[in-house]
Length: 615
Image (cartoon, rainbow, N blue to C red; front, side, top):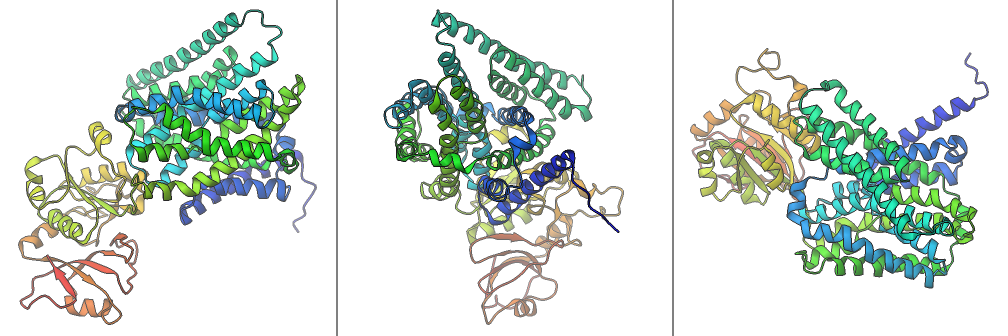
């Protein structure tokens, strides 16, 4: 019979760690399933298992290890953020980004410090430390929100660059103001202090950028084997972070951010594999950190918040942020709509919470009793911005015309007689479609038919820089080369998901055939296992036709099949809300009244049926 004994400290730690990981992934899945910002669910999960139920008490259960873990986790997260900062994005939004990460923080720093001092009655030292923390607009929140919002490239670049660059900048400013406040009596020469701090920060920046350059070229020369590249990168990030922090506290954040930017832009051939590994690791870390920090909150600290501090938060959100954005981006080329969106969206995340947690107790120890209010004040700012900005970003972006209302578009790789007719019908129905081919001659008929096309290699760096796929939700690889289709599908699966990437079968390459590319490297089979690329092309020349048929209460699927015949191939269904669902043998399509069936049918002698429209 199974007997339970008293649980040891080690077992409690193991169970707590398992609970954190489980809740993190559950929150991420629920966020994906119900299309809500994951940060909100992670924060709620932490509150429930922490302050509400008392199951997790991170500071008590993890001790000093908690702050160490937070530091290393934030370093990896910021490195991943730098890894995703592509220089071609900066070219498109350069002036606006530069203003947001240089002039913007200065305006925010001064205005928030003044409001904290005169409204919340904080000392100048604590006011400037708090204002430094508000400069931070963390990528741990911004990146998940951008995945849900479907913003166009320029505003997404503004938010991404600002969040990733300002994270270490805000942390470093907080460190400088803290050290100046604590050691001001011992600092005889402020200029010398600033000079020494500047040298330490500069050395940290050189360490980060140099390490990234060295690693990038070592990877390119195959000095490190493929199976070690991702693990070595993680070790390098942790090492650079620790070494830079020895030079200047929190300078490690700047070092790893620059390291990520260099690695991401030196042209590593397998950078996509590294990014995928880092994305998975960062997803786990972000989920764990938000649950840990919210579970560690003491509800009693919020009772110290009075109306002046709540008013301060409102001023930061509704006055300082928009004023800072509009003033710093004058003559920057940003549109009014972009300024309005950026001026509202500024959620704070992990770095803000971590910095407040480090400095608040130290300020109290060194004679700043009001320093204890930093933790509840910063966490209130995090909660308010995560909730308000998390739920409003998609709505506001849609209202301002800076995002796709429906990501229902289809990207088709390979121009031929069949894909051109298919794309033309989808376009006429109102579906966003983009046809891509590296042959200008193949695209000629598509251009004449008014179909949006892109001439170039979809896997090239130039395509990555110029293509804006914000309205694309699915991919169909339909070129003449089956292996190329598999390669393209593998490239797009991480971005769109396996259930949204399709490719056509080819003759002589059945699943059991040795010429067939492994299923793990392919997209989902489009339409039917027995329908091949060659068969579809042949049927076009046999006068098969594309049709769209709208179902109703009196004309359902059975009537459609009876009218169209058993040979008719159902390609897709368009739901009443405009959602395009590609047919695949992996799933069974569900049909309802109001849906439109897109089909490919053999020629008939009689006129088109009354319920159909043929192309």
